[in-house]
Image (cartoon, rainbow, N blue to C red):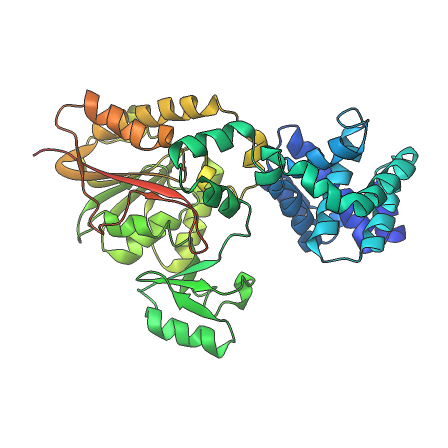
Length: 433
C-alpha cells in the first residue's frame, strides 16, 4: 500500500505505468498469465491507468527476445540483475520504440520508476543503459540482425517449427504474430441484419468492411461501449476466423448439438444465432461457464450450460447422441499469440506433445457421443501441425469408419494469421450410418 500511495501521489503517469508494467511483466516472465494479472489489476483501482499499463505490457511481451537481446548487447550485467530492473528495461525499450513518448521523457521516467519499485540503487544503471541504447541504436540493429530470436520476437524452437511447416510463409506467420490483432464483429442475425448494422456503424463514424456472412472488420479497434446495440445483444466481438466454425457444422433446426469446450462462448452463441438447435455447452471451468451464460443472456440465447470435463462422460452425458459436435479443443494457442503475447514466454516445445495427447483423448471420448451419420468439427487456434492434421490423421487411423470430409466452404483447413483473422485449423469428421 505504501508503494501504491507513493506511485499515485509523487510519480508522473508514465513512471507509474512503467513501474506497474515492470512488476506485471516480471511475474509473467516467471510463469504467470498476462490475462490473469490484468484481471487482478482491473479488480484493484489503485493500480492506475489500465490503458497505459496494458499497452506497455502487451507491447513489451510482443517483443519477445528483442529486448533481452538489447540488454545482452549493451550490458555485462544482462541476466544477472534484479528481475524487476530487467523487466523495467524491457518495458522502457518498448516505450522508446513505440513512438508514443519523447525519448528524454522515457529515460527520465524509467529512472523515477526505479524508486517506485524500491530499486533506487538501479537508477544510474537504468539511465545509462537507456541512453546507451539511444546512442548506439543504428549499430545495434546491425548486430541484432543475425539473432533470429531478436529479429522475429519468438522462441527459437517456435521459429524452427514454423520454418519446417511453412517453408515459404513462415516469416509472414511470425510477423503477423507480432502485430496488434484485428477487431472483428459478429452481427446477431436474430436481432439485426448485417447490412443494417453496417449502416449503424457508419452513422457512428466507425469504418468497417465485410469479411464474412455476419462479420465486419473494423479499421480501428474501439471500446465495446462505442458499438451500437452491443448491450442489447445486436453484435459481439469475435475473430473472423473463429466465425468460420458455425458455418462448417451444417446446422439444421431441431438438431442436438454439443459444444464440448465452450468457453468463452463465442462459438456457442454463433451456433444458436444460426439455427434453432438444442445446444449443450460444456466447459471444465465453472467460472468460465458463468461467462458463457452471461453472454447468452445479453444476446437473448439459451443453451444448456454445464461445468464438466468433456472426456468424463459419466459426469455429464445422458446417453442421447448428438447430430453435431464442436470440439474447439485446448491447444498451444499459437495462432492467437498476438492477442496473448505471454504465450511466447510460457509455452515450451514439449507442450505440443502433451496438447496432442489430450486432443486425441477428447476426440476418442466425443466420438462415442456422436450419432451415426453425425458430424464432429475439430478446431484449434494453433498453427502447429502436431496439434492439427497429425492429431486428426492419428484419430482416423485408429477409429474404424471415421472419415475426414471436405470442408463445405472449400477453403483450406489451416488459416494462418493475417490482417483479417487469427490462425485456426478445422477438420470435419463424419461417422458412418
